[in-house]
Image (tube, rainbow, N blue to C red; front, side):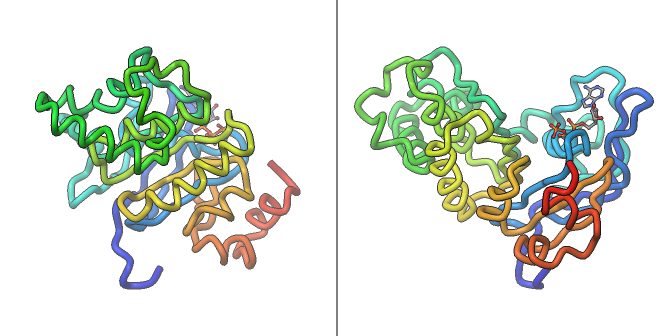
Length: 255
Ligand SMILES: Nc1ncnc2c1ncn2[C@@H]1O[C@H](COP(=O)(O)OP(=O)(O)OP(=O)(O)O)[C@@H](O)[C@H]1O
């Protein structure tokens, strides 16, 4: 990685077990700031587990044990006793299926701000417009902010969920297969959106779609059986992979 690129998150020797099953095995990665990093690899290799570790979503799973460090600004976010809501304000997450709340478009976007105690109507209005513009949804919904979010199409719902995540201005946005439930046109809209969002946020994207990883990401980590086998800038990883397994996977020979 070139020297001028800052690091948003540093993962040191991260291992994770679900009961006796080891799902992550000594993962170390430096996630570049204001870039898109894709996590790819065959089903069950640990992509979602790694992503979910970065805002401690695995905490709720019984029998889940972690070792290692995830450093965000020189603090290990895995330390016990850390403030989880503060962490999730800094590291937001978007899931495979759009999951807006059954509330108005407006209330979805201001949800996190209201939790933080923001009441000033002007601040909330500005945040709604800013987040919806950033999520490329404003022109479509600006006249129907009081409409129930569940009346939107799935592609619009996913952009709304992204607006909800970015309204509280996290530093890192985790995206777990954010387009796998969408049609090709909505997928392209979200892919374009990701490339504009990286100006303000660090994005980490789990995807099964090799073309998507190649199209949108700046860096790619190839995972296999809980390990990161290869991490490189996306062009290098896709054109001249350093490992035989990476090559076999990206050319469709396994996985
Ligand atoms: N809650 C859980 N309890 C027990 N085992 C789990 C749990 N979640 C995941 N696993 C196991 O951990 C391993 C890694 O799973 P993970 O979902 O992280 O992989 P993945 O690469 O994201 O897979 P996919 O591409 O299929 O979504 C798999 O063997 C999976 O079965």
